[in-house]
Length: 273
Image (cartoon, rainbow, N blue to C red; front, side):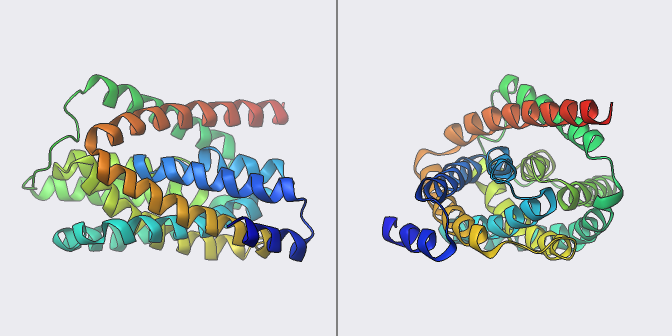
C-alpha cells in the first residue's frame, strides 16, 4: 500500500505527507462510516476543502469515493441483501429522483440552511439512539399499511434530495428510517444503506455534480483506495462485533456529524454577514 501511495505521489506531484494524509483520512473516516452506516463526509470532505479543492469538486470527489465505500461494505455483507431486495427497489425508485433533483438545484440553494437543518436532525438522532437502549439490536419484519408505505416513500425522496445537495449524514438518516420502518437491526439496515445510498445514490449525485466542476483524478484515486479498504474493514468489524458496537458508533458519528454541520452553518452565515 505504501508503495502504491509513493507511485501516486511521484505521478501527480503531491508531497508524500499530503498523499498519506488524504489516504489515512479517507480510510479511517470510511471505516467508521461502514460501522455506523454513514458520516464519511465528517472528515473526508473538510479534509479535501482544506487541501485546496473547490467545494463542488470536493463534493463530487467525495461522492465518487463513497461508491467504493458502498462496494467495500456490500462485498463483505452481500449475503444479507437477498432477503430485502424489495426494500432495495423502493429505495432506488423513490430515492434516485430526489438525488437527481438535489444535485440539480445545489447551485441555487443556500448551503447554510441545509447544514443547519441536517445538523439538528443528526444531533436529535444521536440523543434518540442513546436513550433508546434496545433500538436496532434485534431484527424483525414490520407489516406496513398504506400510510406507512407512503410515508416511507416521501422520506426516502426527501433524504435523496439532501443526499444530492450536501454530503454528510444522509446515510445515517436512511439507516435510521429502515430501522424504524421495517424493524431491522443495525447490521441489516446498514447493509442496505451501503448498497443503495453508497453505490447508486452517490454515483448518480457525483455524475450530476461533476457537470458543475470536473473531478480531480489524482485525489479521486487516493479516496477510492481509502474508501474501499476502509469500507471493507469497517464492515468486517461490524460483522464480528455485532449490533452493540454498531449502535454505539452510530450514536457517536451522528453527534459529531451534527456538530460539524452546525459549525459549517455558522461559518456560512458569518461569511454572508
